[in-house]
Image (cartoon, rainbow, N blue to C red; front, side):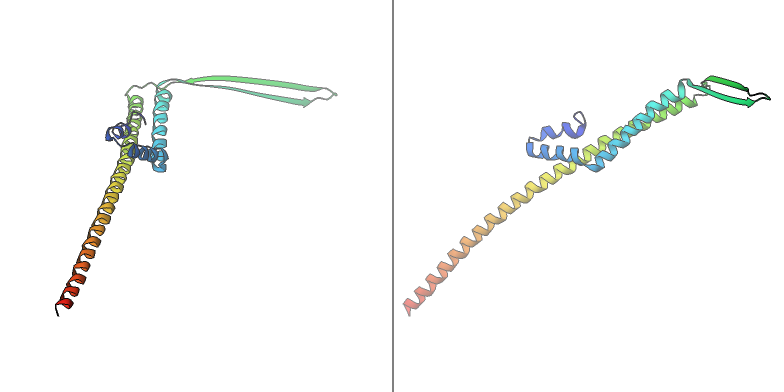
Length: 173
């Protein structure tokens, strides 16, 4: 996350509060955690695709049996039979199918990484936009409160002029 575009441009905004809010959103976004899990799974599949397809595979096995057969006398004939096996398999990549499959898996992991970066950038952008909307709303509220005070002063002044005008007109009669 530290090297992703989502975090680098946040520091250029000169607002520690907005950067902190965006970083908190990046750290706590469940959707972002899902995208990150998909990326990690794709990266592990790509690693397994290379090793599993292009390198030989080995399997080792062992098996044993024991039998006892009665005889005409009190003795028994005991037979023990043990087998073991080692199998090595390797598919020759004559037409490049295995290498292409490994490359495709690696490219899919790269695409998942870009999806993760895009998602991080989107979450950071949404957080920054929410921060700007909040600042705008606070400034609009301050402006509306100042407008209200100005209008209340104008009303008070008009009311005093009106009251003074009534008093003057009564005195003239």
